[in-house]
Image (cartoon, rainbow, N blue to C red):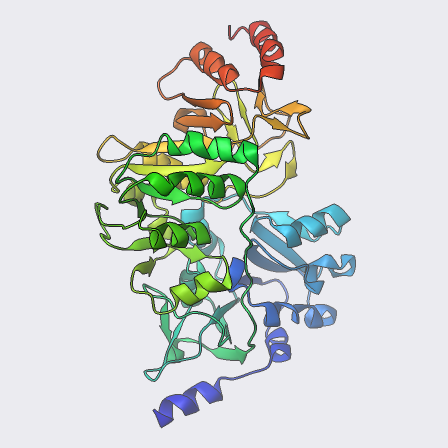
Length: 436
């Protein structure tokens, strides 16, 4: 035990010293979302005057850090975002020229990057070491553990407020180059209160979920509404990328039992988590939650092995042919592909033939001014889900299944769940396109 304490102490450095490790023309990869190493990232900019062309890869960057929010950092640092969030969006809106988007599928985020070049520096977060010398990577191992194992230099920011989670999250201190102690409340995610429209969408989603299904549920108002509507279901299981409060709540209510899952029976499977402090306390040493790497959790070949797999995601708009846009409007990148394609493809290819992919959205945007069911996407819009993979589409006006339908049949079906104010106009546009 004394030797482990000495080993750990010998690797302790300050957040300022982490900035000293940064080198020009290299890649830094940081942990994502609630695992964001906020102490270290707040000091990256200190290396500005001696480095150039440093790419910092991140997902769901939560804060507007100096290293990329300041326009003077252009040429020195660039945030390379796999999935935009409030931090990266703020920099884009300010026109700093310091943010780029990285197209990817979540289950290949780590492996694709490692094919390009070896990362120089990985910075993540962890719990304090236990008496055996192991830390837990806590709230996420989507790509974090793969990168830690391959980076030239690895740094973990130790936070005694993080939960010690179970699964593939444990790393021995001998496998890490440096530790930084930075204790803070982990970033939390408030649960938005669904409005009437969202609740109607949630009910339509719940009508498609059978008892005993294994579900993947995203974040936001509509997934929260779906969770509320699932309260009458029995023996649901969870195989998801992101674990959120609504899943914990359904478990506590006895709706989620994980007892009818085809594999990982009795356990939640996830690759990262973000929610309330209550959820973090619930996760601490909780043997019912298994954290696995993203290349495993989100592999469509693995997802398809779940019984009655149901993937529930949201989008920005859907075109008449069934293409789904969930991340951009035109060339304006709003979020990212994330795991939507992974989970949708895995669900519809379920081994038992009972899997479903559900894509939900409100029927209008801009306070009712625009239809989200559209003839064609604006120029430059990224297609998140290929039309051949689109299964169920849900709005507050109902649900339709597009699998196996012709373009003509898809067009009719989608117009039937568009907002009534736009149905006549959409029908005329479909005729002009030759779809009807």
